[in-house]
Image: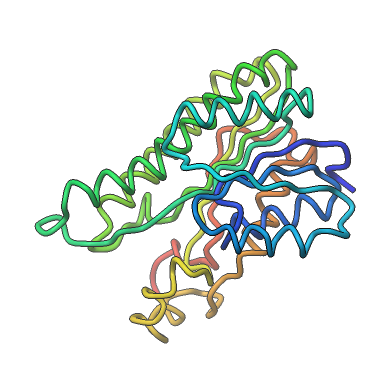
Length: 250
């Protein structure tokens, strides 16, 4: 049980990749606080699914764009747990559209959720982790940060920002034994990618050397590795989990 006794926060943890991360951490012994935005039913279903797991799980409703709420949640959990060992920033949205038609609201919503949300929770855990002289942060990025498609200017910008944040923060916190890494998934079978997968059809599969769409559990396995002591000498890295898509060619 790699995470027995560990305390973790997972944002965007009620669905998709975040949900898979919660399941992995709890089943390996961690106590996990799931931060979800609106889908209370999905959060409750997750709690029920994990009721017999080795670790424990609770759900907290919050908008990751709210800086003050992030600080309150971390303070609340510190009172309960006394420490926070792992933060997984998985909350994210897409609102694709060409730049010529993109509204300020579409730009703002995506950047504030994906990038500002990551900042808010990184900022909230930084001081506690520094004081305890240890911790792990794993940010969910995307291969779109480096290999963006048309209509992804807001999404690509937000994920590129996460990559830069990850590398800079890793340098800042390394002396306190805090590791900061990112995972950059490619095409993964989630609700968020459903529209793109439907439009691309077999074309996207043919572009992936492994010839299939990835599963959230496969991304969660890499997140769990980075959060564990098995990755004790890894920091400041952005690990692609994309079936070879970013290699290019056919």
